[in-house]
Image (cartoon, rainbow, N blue to C red; front, side, top):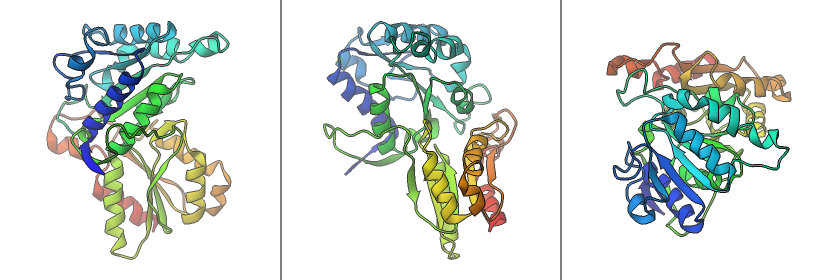
Length: 326
C-alpha cells in the first residue's frame, strides 16, 4: 500500500464521503481558503465550493450549534473546531442538544454530525491550546468518541463516523498529523467499525492499553522489553465510546498484568474507566497485581518545551511502570 500522512488520510475520508453524498457539508474556522489550521482541508474548497465548505466566524458555540441544527434538518455536517480546548465554548449545543435529541424525541430525530478537533500537547501552544479533554465528552450519554493513532485508522474510522446517525466527537492529536502510514488507494472504500479495538502488538507477559499518540510510545517500550525476553501486548482502543470491553478483558486474562497509558491528566482521566472495566469483570481474578495507570501530570500544559515534554507520559515513565509490575 502507499504511505500518506495522518492529515492526508483525514482529508481523503472527508472528500470521498462528500463526493458520494451531497448532504454532507463541512464548516469551521479557516477550513476553506486557508486550508485548515493544520492544513487538513487543503483543496477541499476548490473541489466542493463555498456552499459545502463554509468558513465560519470565530465562534465555536455557533459552529457547533449550526451543525446540530443542520443535522436535525437533514444534512450530515462535519464541524471542525480549531483546538479541542475550545469545546468549552461548544458544550451547550454538543452536550444538551446533540447528545440528547434522539432520546428526547423517542428516536424520531437523529443528529448525524461529526465534530472534528485537534487535541493534545507537543506543539508549544501552551496551556489553552494543548489539553486532552476526551474524558469530558466520554461522560455524556449520546456522544460517541474516537481518537485514532494511525493514518489507516484515521481514514477508516472517520468514514464510519460520517456515516453514523449519531453525533461523533473525533479527536485528532496534533503531533500525529505529519506521521505517515500505509493506507489503501483512493477509491478502495474501507471503513473501521466503532467499538472495535486493535491489538497493535500481541504478547503474553503484560498488556499496555492506550490510544492516540501514546500508541507509538507504548510500542517503543514493548520493543525495548522484547530485548529482555518480555513479551508485551499493546492494545489501541481507538474508539473510546463505544468501547471494546471484551478485548480488554480477554487480554487481561491472558497476561495478568495491565498498564493503562494516556496523555490526559491522570485524575479523572479515561484510564480510570478502562481500569474499572477490567476489575469489574472476571478478569480481576486473573490479575497478578493491581492495574497501573500512567497519565499526564495534574498541571496545565507549560509553554516551556522542556517542561511540556515531561508533563505527559514519556517512554521512560511508561517503562518504569511496566518494570514495577514485572
